[in-house]
Amino acid sequence: MKKTRLVAVTAAVLMGTFATFSTAETAQAATWHKNVPSAIRGTWKEKGGDLNYKFKITSSTFKLSARLGDPQTANKVTYHHAKGSSYYYLRGHETAYTSGRELLYYKVKKTGNHIRIVNYLTTLGGSSYKSSRYMPFSFYK
Image 1 (cartoon, rainbow, N blue to C red):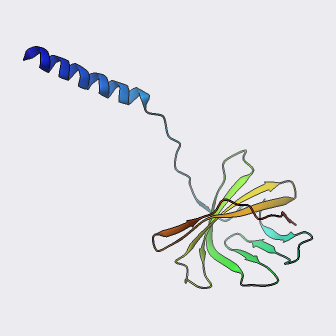
Image 2 (image 1 turned 180 degrees about the vertical axis):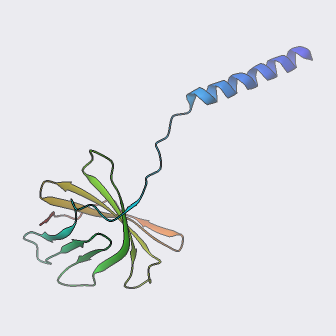
Image 3 (image 1 turned 45 degrees about the vertical axis):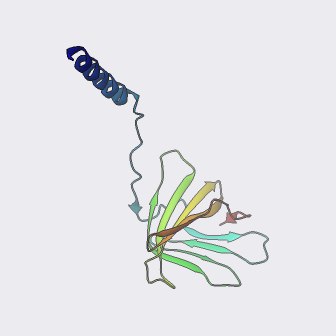
């Protein structure tokens, strides 16, 4: 009986020690900041396309529009950017149809004087839609 208890206690201690030292360190949660940085602010235009896409980014709003169709507009925009990275993550409340309940998440890759964008996540009322495709063109200032 004592041997069984000793084996059980030893196993429990070893499992706890193994779990403590084998757990990978996780990264800190992303901090979302107000006022989009000036590096990506401005009016970005599609070059040479048929629909004349524009992506206008201000310090607190963004608007993706084309010659045809409804624009996608968001306010209360916050951003996340890791130091040294070329990626900026924008999050904003869609204002045209859902009165700010829908959240739009954009990933913006800035390279020189152009950007590539993808709407990688849209959430509304607990449901979400994920996308991972970049638009097939770049935007230029």
